[in-house]
Each structure stands twice: as structure tokens, then as C-alpha cells.
Image (cartoon, rainbow, N blue to C red):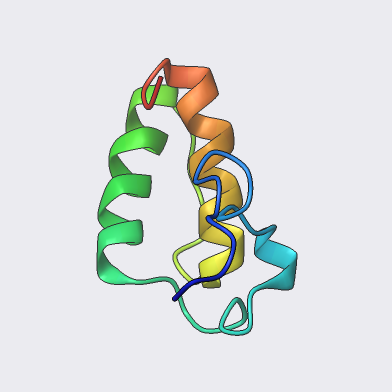
Length: 69
């Protein structure tokens, strides 16, 4: 409180490589969304990804599919 305000467009975004919990298994919502994106993109992804890996695939597949714009 009372500190500088964060710019949610820039400051709140952290590279998945820097996540403290990035090595943990992907979450249920990540898996579900990745399944949808991969199916739409015609790709198959490994079933066991970390949170960071899942996030990177989500970003990539959103560009491929046009989602998340």
C-alpha cells in the first residue's frame, strides 16, 4: 500500500522461466485449455508438462489459433 502502482500490461507479467512454482505440474485449467488449443491447432502435446511449459505452449497456440487476442 502506498507504493508505486503496477502497470498490469507490463509489470505483472513474469517470464515463466522465472516462476517459483514453474516446475510444478500444470494445473487442471491449463490442461483443459491446452487440450482445446492443441486440438484446434492439430497438434499433440505431452500429457505431463510443468506449469511454465504449459504457459509457454498456451501463449504459442493462442497465436496459432487466433484465440486470446
